[in-house]
Every structure is written in C-alpha cells, then in structure tokens.
Length: 71
Image 1 (tube, rainbow, N blue to C red):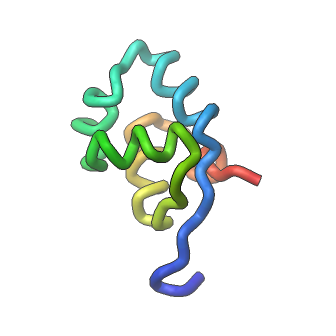
Image 2: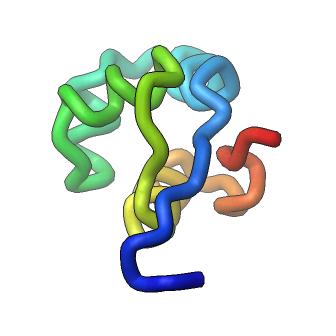
C-alpha cells in the first residue's frame, strides 16, 4: 500500500460495532484517538481511511482491522 492509500471502511459495520458497546461517536473518538467528525464520515460511507486510522479504530473496538474494511 502506498503512503497515501485510503481504504474503504464498512460504515454500517463500524456503527454496529460501536453501538454494540453502547458507545457514542465521542466515546469511540476518545478511545481511538480518531476525531469524531472523521468517525461520522466513515460511518456514513463518505470517505476512505488511512490504514493507520483503521488500526486505531479496530484496536479501540477490539476487533481485527479486516473486520472494518468494506468490499
């Protein structure tokens, strides 16, 4: 992957994983270090994410990063 490669996140899955933990977007932002506006953008499928960002979200949600990647 190139340094500027963005990966599509499965926004629905991201939202379900977050809500399963009863977290608000702000809770996930705090735990992952990813800005709440970016998380909202990902959940709505409006942007791809850098692989490091996907890893941060996955770590906070305690899932494998591949679970967050869309098709």
